[in-house]
Length: 303
Ligand code: C5P
Image 1 (cartoon, rainbow, N blue to C red):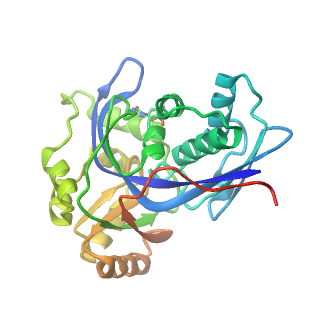
Image 2 (tube, helix red, strand yellow):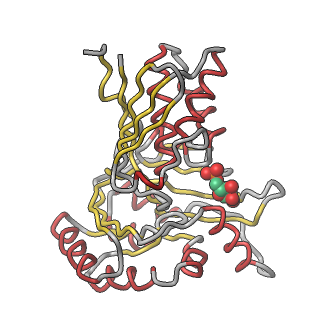
Image 3 (spheres, rainbow, N blue to C red):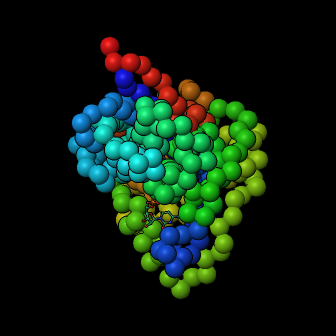
C-alpha cells in the first residue's frame, strides 16, 4: 500500500506585514497564489517513521523529526492514538529555503497522504487545524488556488481568479531563513509607524479578472526590503528580469527566490533565457498559476 500526494509551491502576490506581535509573529495580509511547481510526497507503511528525499536540493532537506512532513505524520497519529510508522519519501522540485513554501508543501502533502493511507478520515476542518499548528503557510499548501491569509497567514479565504497567470522564477545560489528575514524587517521598521496590514482591492480585482497588467501594477511584498538587505545581489536578478520585459519583478515571500510575472508563454521563455544568461541566479523555472492544492495522485496496494 502506498499513497502519493502532489503539492504546489506558492508565490505571494501581496505580502503586507504588520508590526511584531507579543508572540513574535507578525499579522499579515498575505495573498497567496499556488504555482505549478510541485513536490510529491509518498507514504508507505514501515516499522518506524523514516524520511527520504530526492531532487536537486535534497541534500539541504532535514531527514529527522524537524521536517514538517514528519511533524505532520506525528500530529495526525497523536490525534488518533496510533504510531506514525510510515516511510515518507519526498520528490522535491520546490526550492529549499526559497520563499516558495516548499517545507510547508511537504507538511500538507504528508498530512493528506497519511490520512489517506491510515483511513483516518480527518475532516477538511481538522486537516486545516493541523496544518495551522505546523506553520503559517501550511494551510495554503493544502488548499492551493488563490487565497487571502490573515492572522499569521493561516486564516484563509479563497479568492477568485479569472485566468491563468504566467510566471518565471529565479532560484538563488543560497537560501534565506524566514525568521531572519522577519527579524531584519523588524530592524528596518524600528522607530517607524507600521500600518495594519490590509489586502489591496486593486490586486484582488486583478486576480478576479485574470488581468496580468493590473496584477503587475498591484503586486507588493513588505518583506522585500529586508530580503534585499540580507541578500543585496537579488536586486541584480530583479533588474535582469525587468530588462527582459517582465511585467513585474518581486521577491517571493521571504525570498530569496525572485518571481517575474509575464504576459504569456512566449514572454516566459524569453525572460527565462535572459535570466539564465544574466548569471545572477542558480536555476530558472517557468510555471503557471493558479495550481490546485494538495491532491492524491496515487493510492494503490503494494505490487
Ligand atoms: O509559521 P512558520 O513556522 O512558518 O513561521 C516561521 C517564522 O517566520 C516564525 O518563527 C517567525 O519568525 C516568522 N513569521 C512571522 N510572522 C508570520 C509568519 C512567520 O514573524 N505571520
